[in-house]
Image (spheres, rainbow over the protein chains, first blue to last red):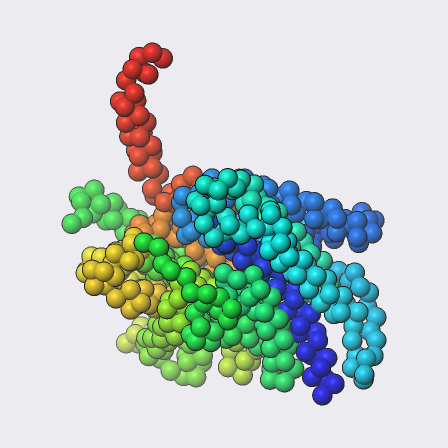
Length: 291
Length: 326
């Protein structure tokens, strides 16, 4: 039983981290129609930015702040301005291919320019553990859970309660009406990209201690984020959180009780089952097709 | 029908390929054979991506299924001629199984489903040591033989692969000319309209994906005896992305797009060895740039240029007074 609780807790913590990457992914899709196949690499880059910061002797928090700023500038502004904007009107397919190309390019740059080896990465919350009712709990798991939970809930509040947040939702739902109502659509879309950039930087901070910093770490994270987003419901922000937690918990349990070898396949199976039974995801609402 | 120019070009290309073994050393010939193998796989992916408009990110995985099936069966004493059709069939069936749930929902769900499936396949190749040899792989895979004649040497095997490539290419060309091929293009260009004219979208998209997977199976079945040794690495996600880039860079939906794309992805790096890992970086970013400026791929250059020119001309004609004033 204690084993089970331990697995459950660490699964929820990992899941909450997936949820952040998934949430950014969903936001981009809703607001800008961009399916970002490089989302995993968007997590990998801040991890290496922090690693470089650490090697210059910066403390972790300072390296993290630098990484967030760089992330908003490069993965937010430059990505939007130079890659997504010029492709407006060329359709989803072109964006998919471009982000896939970006994914190859970014991985190869890190592999060729920095290192092909995995690098250890310090945890913000330290390595210690404590006992709670017989269950061994690590500060890293609790910290990740709290941090990720706060991020997701804070974002929800921002999107639902503030004028800017509601304007962003309006843009996501119907760009034309939003523009007619006087909302600055371009700025709202930029905010979405910036939020995604912050989310991936936080994801990197929390997940890299377990995944290790490696040029291809994004393959796995990106994939889990897609699956979490779709399992939860692609057009619902809370869905990303639910999907992330389900994926995190189930793959942890499957890894412990069934087979550790196929742990990474759990998300795919869940995804296939969910889209067979409920194509719009667990919390998603059916979408109508546009002709 | 094919134009005279087209026929002459094909004949010339074929003659060059037939003569190639006389001029190439072992490694050059190996590379050329490998290119043909990649061309077969990329032709299949082009059917899925270019003609049916689906994103499939598991092509290297399917190639792995083909390669492992052939290698395992030949190790168990079965003939290549039994193993390879089975390998192709297996890829086709796997394509149907993975494509069905995804394609019921949205076309780009297939991208995610196939990406995850490729990950699962690599895990399988790596973990099931009793069957696949795990990370050590399978060694000493023999080349096929027919009626006592073994395609043992590099040149005979090259000719064998060339023959298969031509047959696979012709089969694909015929398929694309058939009503089936037209239906593929119709559902890429406007799925809803295609459906309203009676094309069963799900069935056709699924079929185009499964046929593409089967082509990867053919490539895999040839890959195993070509390199003699297989392990999980070449069948990972990275190479699946590379396959997609081959099709897109060459020109998706153009018959010779993948032929050019495979050459750029495989042959060019050999001459740009000094770039090493940077080559892939350049390749990836080039694909991004291409999607922005030349979404139709390299083979669409002429049309894109003509289109831009006619647009400019139309603009000039539309505003004659403005032109005079300037």
